[in-house]
Length: 84
Image (cartoon, rainbow, N blue to C red; front, side):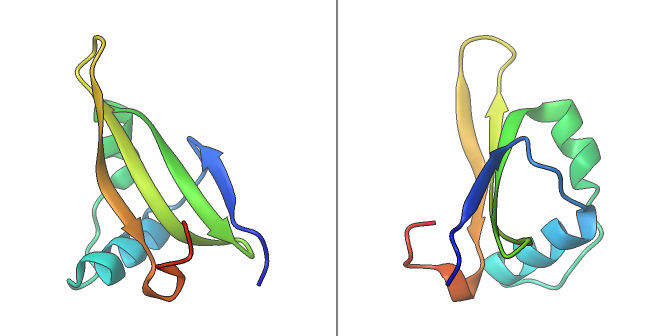
């Protein structure tokens, strides 16, 4: 297996994140505008990739001040238990 690469505020497309989110949380793929949502509500996010594919994601939400917390933490089923 290749190394997992992590990127703060990494580039992604909505379709890839919607597919990962559906797999990770066990629901049908939807058409959430993640890019728009993150632009409005996030301090940042981290994308995890292996061989160029999005395999993990976490959203760092903040209150506009000094508090931040994690939401939407998801790792693809085939990559769980591997430290991603």
